[in-house]
Image 1 (cartoon, protein in one colour):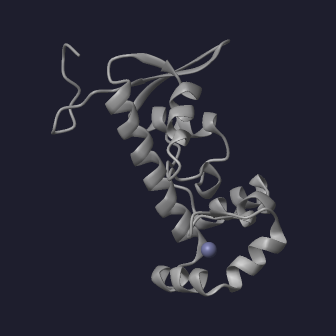
Image 2: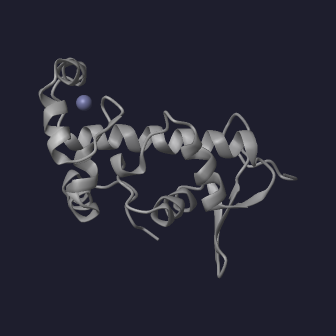
Length: 155
Ligand SMILES: [Zn+2]
């Protein structure tokens, strides 16, 4: 309780480091291109197509980009919950597997969350889902809200 839900740029930078730069570096989220290794990624970064994409981002510092992808990741994940699992309690890994089935999904390594558990705890803290940890893993239930953001009484 009382814990800030927003990460400072420094915290985000630390998380990126913690997750391993290797992973983050070999996937270009901006172009949605997976490179085999760092060398290929470096070549990719020199390519014209990548430079063009970077211009679109207008030299945003990395943490702004991470925040943007985190928002998109969360939005898409919650939308999927609402669409497919609106009235059921479901294992977080099941939803996640459906999520990454979409080949255009935002990769979690481009977000502020290092693990699925961390992300799911965020959903719980921000009141988007009910979260319960069991010995069979983490389960989530979408919290239905009306257009004003209130939880219907007999949901
Ligand atoms: Zn690129």
